[in-house]
Amino acid sequence: MPAVSAARSKKAHRPVAVPANDPAMLLARARNAAFAEASRGNLGGGLGVLYDALQGEPMSHDLLSDMAALLLAAGKLEHAAGYAQRALQAQSLHGPSLYTLAFALSGLGQVDRAIGVLNELQSGAGRDSLQAEAPELIPVAMIELERLRRSRKA
Image 1: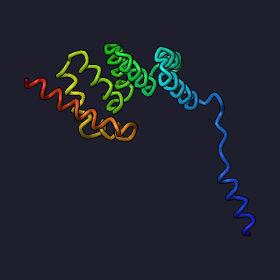
Image 2 (image 1 turned 60 degrees about the vertical axis):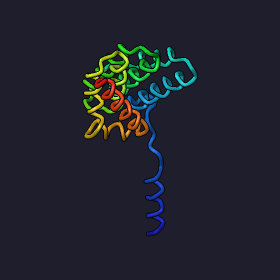
Image 3 (image 1 turned 135 degrees about the horizontal axis):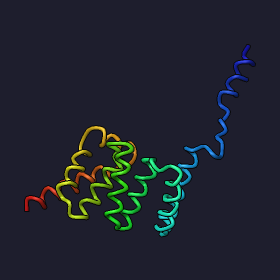
Image 4 (image 1 turned 90 degrees about the vertical axis):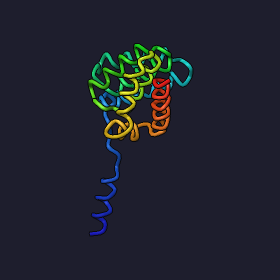
């Protein structure tokens, strides 16, 4: 009997093959390739990879959010805000998209809207989402919220 148990346990731990054309795998590869390009200083190449991937998955909140983040990094604030808003339409209260939208709005001088978005990141589902995906950004968002509140009073 122990030999049967050992054989079953070996089968249970065998990795499952994922088809090369699995949509989730293709999405992950595109996202990784885009950020790899951006980290090498080729922001345009990263944006191109995401743009191409969006042609196949136009409502992927992950792709839209990544596009928004790279556009924000490139200083393309209006485009970053647009992609972040599209990502939020696909998945409301997505923390990274809220973060990107807030900073794009802040950069565009839309202080009240930026404060409203950053308030979403203070607690609840938006904060939980950001905590799960990029916890290091929470303090940055809260510092920006305080800065914007002070600037509005001044």
